[in-house]
Length: 224
Image (cartoon, rainbow, N blue to C red; front, side, top):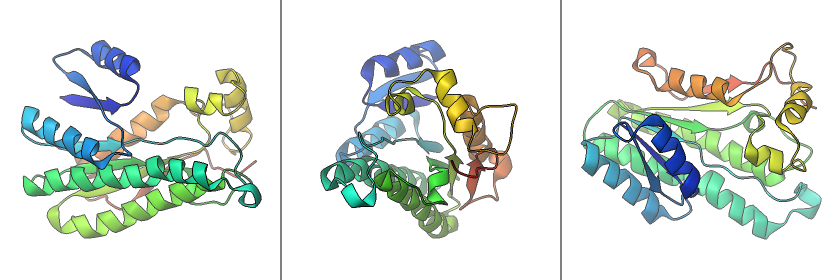
C-alpha cells in the first residue's frame, strides 16, 4: 500500500486515484509542522501495520536567485524549514516507526547535485541540499545497527512544474534543453521517471547492503 503525502490536495488525490484506491491513498501533510509528519507516519502504521519504505521528496525553491550578497533571510528560513528541517522530521519519524517494529526498512531522500557543488546563485537551496546529504550520512550511521538503510538520490537540473515556475514558466522542452547543457551525456534528457527509477533501485530489497549512499543522476554534471 502506498500513502502519498503533500499539501497539494487536488493533485495528491488525483494521483492516488490514478493508482487505485485499494493500492494508494492521499494524506495532507505539511512537513514544516512536525506534528503533521508524526501523524502521517502514525496513521500509516495504524492502517497498514508497519512502515517499510519512506521516500522524502519535500523541497521548494526561493522566489529569487539568492546570492550571498543579497540573501533574503526570511526566504532562507522558509526554504530550510521545508528542505532541511522538514526532511529531518520525515527521516526521524519514519525511522522511529521502523525501529519500534523491528523491521528492516529503507529511507530515501531527494538531495541534488548542489549537495556536491557550489553555485552562482540559490545559496539557500545549495545549503539545504548539503544539509540533506549530511542528514543521510548521519542517519545511515546511526540507524545501521537497527537494519535501517538511509540513502539519497541527487538529480541535476530536472524540468518540473516547480522548476519551470522558477524559470519564467519556460516550456518543459525549453528547460530540458537548457539543463542538458550542464551534462556531458548527450542524446537524452533527464526526466522524473529517471529519478523514480533511481529511488526504486535504492528502496528495493536487492540493495540490502547499500546505505549512506548518494546516487547521482546527473549525466556527468559539469555545471553551466
